[in-house]
Length: 318
Image (cartoon, rainbow, N blue to C red; front, side, top):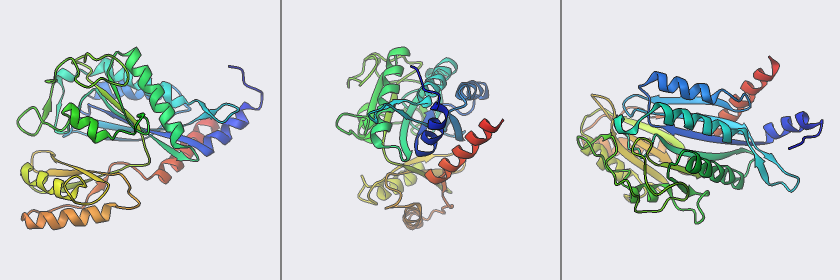
């Protein structure tokens, strides 16, 4: 593809006005050599920035937050983002360093590269996020022979992530009643994936890829090892259990002496963390349990854009 001499100036405008964010969830946080390999792959292209990292040892899971720009053709259609190759490079490193058959943790998962979620930032559109999600899905399905399920705006009918996960058995622990270990599902999938084969590699598992408006991830520690109580609280807080609209929750073991309510706030500007915290505290008190103040696992979209702009500017000034 040929670019005119003013490309660099145009690119600067694109960087500031049309950004995509990727939340990349990988099933590993204890193997530092694996994480180092994944992060080296993520730094190969300076046009993509890893703005945040959130590892959780108890869950044996890590989330990387990546940001880059999206370019358009003369009709305004998205045609390129550095994020695409960075995501693929990190996925390749993850598949090369992690074996799902030997993985275990207290958080559900279906694959080594478990979930890839694209968000539009700044002036980017949901169509652009969905375009990139579908492009990455095709690459992962074809290049790595991993079944990929699309969700939300990336799916033709907008199918929800939790619906697909429920169909695939994501929420059912397979070890000690509260852990996920190895691969125990059938090798032939009952639900055809959107990309990739219908046969699953037990070492790599399945990948979910979606695009949707910003989701806030907020976890609330419960000072108890009673995971049954945590699950009851989680269900009563969630929209599915008749609780708060647009809130999805899991009650999980988190370390040796506590449990946790892991929350997805699908519309955080409508139902925010304070309201969820208050509801959990009220329900926990009825169970006779103490609750700590919850915490976000990522920055706000505004903070992520600021951090990206600062980091990319520093890189270009070198």
